[in-house]
Image (cartoon, rainbow, N blue to C red; front, side, top):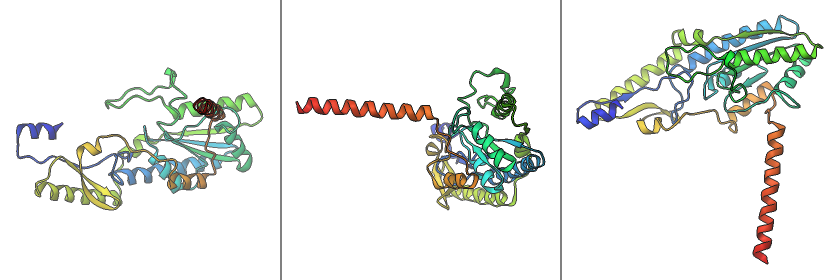
Length: 284
């Protein structure tokens, strides 16, 4: 908006953006400022949850990390810690009840090793807890959409499940390090990265460019027009290699809902039948 107004007035002012969000959800660029620091601090929270879970019989550590629409922090913190048994992100839907569901997986993992750690991004599973006013966070001064606390909801669901079963007592600890992650100073990697972006921004402005954001694309610093950056949000691609590495590390299932699979199979069968009838009519 500032760039458009400056251009409308014909002012000799360069408007340059520097990408900063710890969620790493800015399109086009490889990485934004603050992401490395966030992952490093998130890993400490995950390690604490692992210690808590391991020190109790059937201990479960649940860690809620930031990521409203993208699960990059949760994914990278999981890969960094190597002690996480399940990572839940907005891009990969999951379900709780029934065969192959999350609760069954938790029970299975507790029987195998006696403890487990679950990392969940704040935007994961929101479709499951819509209409739960009791777990909605109080709004802060930001303009962000208010999400219910999925960490509290999941913790309560797990407790309720095992209370009903009455065969296995659990010891669950819930950790929400959100403001600890937001409030720490940037680490060395982000400091160097910030310096490089600042220098690139100044070079671009002094060269006469405006209305662009600096950022690395495939490892090379580029000048990217604002409209490309504002087109949407970048998310984890669950068919990509990085998510496959996470699944290999945690040994978690993909949590595909059998009802959805059945529905897709029936829909595919109906389409094939319809196509067959159409072909028959054309042949006739």
